[in-house]
Length: 64
Image (cartoon, rainbow, N blue to C red; front, side):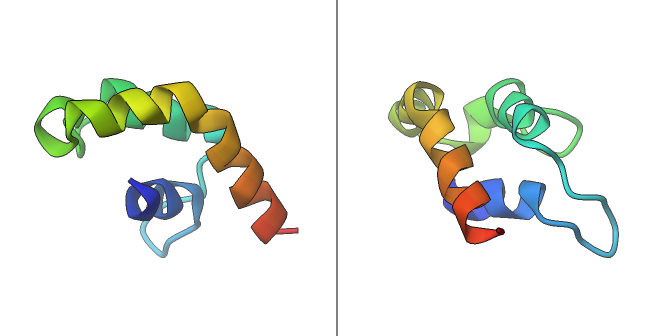
């Protein structure tokens, strides 16, 4: 989860950096690259849903 969150938030040569809201939506709902149901353990996904704000705070504190 942390690796995917980081990959979505960080700028890459093939994509711009995404904000937390877009990252959250991709992880929870999926997109053309990620199927959350097939990718994550349901319990991990549930914990992310509950604590996603803490992930954003950690990201924000590490990039400032």
